[in-house]
Length: 294
Ligand code: GUN
Image 1 (cartoon, protein in one colour):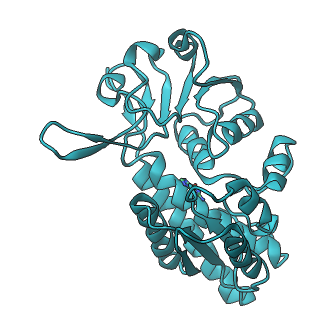
Image 2: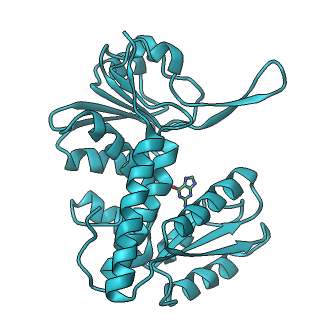
């Protein structure tokens, strides 16, 4: 048996196209162009690639984007001043501060300073709290993408045993809330979990978000389970080249799982598409327009 491959590229392109159609409609009907501001501090090469991709795809969807590049030596006060300026800019509906921030800066303090209405990463305490309370909220993009991908396989996640591996604020914790909203039964495992393999083996839906290359083995996966791999790990090969791998041992898992996301070409594609969707949602909410039909 070989698992169905969940094609994040196609699913993300479809979502981006729907966002572009709705963005064009609100510009035509209401004169509003959704705008995203991306803030990058320092010159981490991976973060530079991510931010460039976010800006490019925002523009390709017919939305406005601006980029704020600060040196790695920027102070907390300087970064807070940029966030404050963007909070008050009427052309900006979404603010994204790329993480991780260079050492010495307090990410929690920065994220908390973003106007919750413009917090398109859904990471501020207000949006995280609203999500935890089952209220409408701007929701973190990667977890949102995971749910969309899982729902391309299962029309409903209700009653499924979902096991999340990893408890980060960016992925694991918000995933708990999103899966609860879908009426799944949720287990969150982490670095201190004992006997992870049997915990994982109970899962109908495995969501791996630990950042450890190929940690989840085929023997941990229940036959037929759906596997969503959030990991993006660059590993060195014997010939001196590098390769991207996920948190799941993909080629062996392919033989056991019912459906699986590849790396690259799975969850990673969805993060940016969901960011565009959140920017459109934020623009509609700020201008008191109905929520977009995406
Ligand atoms: N770094 C890695 N993923 C993300 C993300 O989704 N948002 C932000 N702001 N930083 C990230």
